[in-house]
Amino acid sequence: MRKVKETLALSVVIVLVTATFAIAEFKATSVSEFPYFQLGCLIVGGMTVISLKHKYQKMYTGELVTVFCLYTILIALFTAPVINVIKAAVS
Image 1 (cartoon, one colour):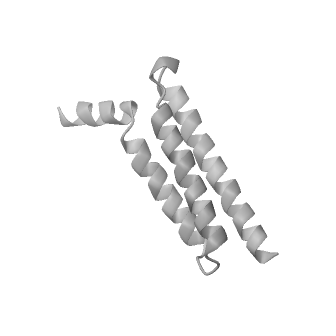
Image 2 (spheres, helix red, strand yellow):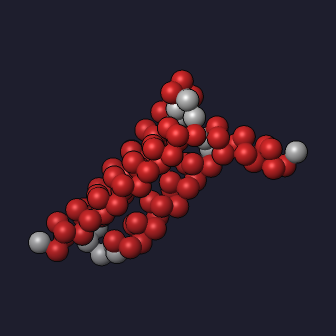
């Protein structure tokens, strides 16, 4: 039962973080420039993290949440709005 609860909690966090990423990118860009590839990578990464938690019991939920949040930040760094802000800051 504990395994199911921890996997469910991790799933909820991953869905919320992915939804937050999608909403933020939708607000920052137009529909034609929406980063569908990055969103797809985020969804596949989330499914991978959930399957790892399901397969390996000794992994802590907090560790996996941290890993997914860092992965989300890494994915967000390679979107057009963030790259434009970095270009503006450098020049």
